[in-house]
Image (cartoon, rainbow, N blue to C red; front, side, top):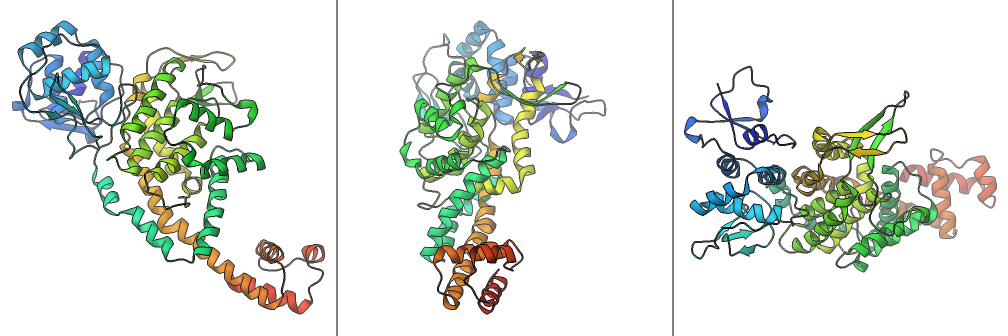
Amino acid sequence: MATLIGYQWLIKNLDLDVPSPAQISMIGEPDNSESYPKDRIRTFRKEYQVSDDPISHLCFALKHESIDLSIIDRTLRVIDRKTLEKRLNESLGKYERKIGFYYEFLIGNDLDVPKMTTGNYIDLLDPSEYFTAPPDKSQKWRVNNNLIGTPEFCPIVRKTPVLMEFIDKNLDKKVKDLLSSYPLSVILRANQYLYLKETKSSFMIEREEPKGDRIQRFVQLLHRRNAFPGMTKEDFIRIQNMIVDPRFSSKDYRTDQNYVGERIGNGTEIVHYISPSPDSVGGMMDGLIATMTRTRQEVHPVIRAACLSFGFVFIHPFDDGNGRIHRFLIHDILAKGNFTPDDAIFPVSAHILNNMDDYDRCLESFSRKVMEISRYEIDSEGILTKKNDTDFIYKYFDATAMSEYLFKVIEETINVDIPAELDFLLRYEKAKKEIQAIVDMPDSKIDLFIDVCRQNNGVLSVVKRKKFFPMLSDEEVSSLENVVSITF
């Protein structure tokens, strides 16, 4: 019969209220009576058995399992502090030093353990397995803190084969090469169109009908990315005010508990996602802003964009506009990281809109963890009250899936969406020149002719001809219709 070890032992024996870990470690082969998913079980020989105490099992987890800061945090909050100090004063091996650092980093209290004066520094995260930030040296534990975040916000991203393959593709160079193969006039026109398309798509993802002035505000925001060089709390509030209906603009982060749900016919509320408690939002956002600075160097722009943009939408700091700011952050971070060519934009929202199932699955990979342990009540007015603390989940989420998803979206926009738009504009310019050669009309009239014909299967309707083009002869109309039909 198999016995638990590592994270799952800690969860069971310390009664931790945390989402299940990615891996269930066991000593010996599990039998058919085990209740854990078989595809997540990893078995170890009996030589790997450790002493039956939390610190030993945490050392095992740090050595043999993926870093899960949420479980580490919850474990260290219930381990007896005096017992931990006694153990660390007796032995300061590699993993005990990491535990000591994690305790002071996550809990915020100093342990009564003397500062180390000799020995090599060790990396907190293995750079061959995780994406890391430039290290800060902890002299007390002789540990290089290379976590990408802070105690208030610290995503983890594993160096999976998928992510490493994406990085090796040099997608930023690929899109620059793609754009350089088209005429400048087409690029400039495409950029204008893609900014507008991206804006409309970002609204439509949230099932909102974008109004003219709100569209213009969002387009202006995308063009004004460099107006927010460092991003502060005031910048986030200013951005929110720019893109929402003025009646719903915020002067500060939210003070209410919000959630995503739907009512069914009998009045029952189905809750899909619960945001962190309003009291924790300010600290988490401070951590996110600090992580922006911490990851500016050495962290790949797409990894950085995934951590920060998805982290923002998980925190949900405002009552309105969170989704649009989430997608703005993707563009902002990629541009500041020189991943996006000058004045260009990846049509991320447009791609999401056309592939909503993929986007939903990405979001659900996190929301499932939140809902797995959330306990709450909803009153008759739809006010939700959380009954347990889940705020640590939002601080310490694994952003690997979000990073893989964002890379996939960017690659598909480069391979499919951007070339399709550029090729369409090449055809459009060709059609305009041919129409101009037949009838010397103003540009606006040519654009209108092409649009109304394309809306009517290449034919100019009687009504539209009478309204907009009464000056054209039958022969001219036929020739122009032929150009549109052949071109499009």
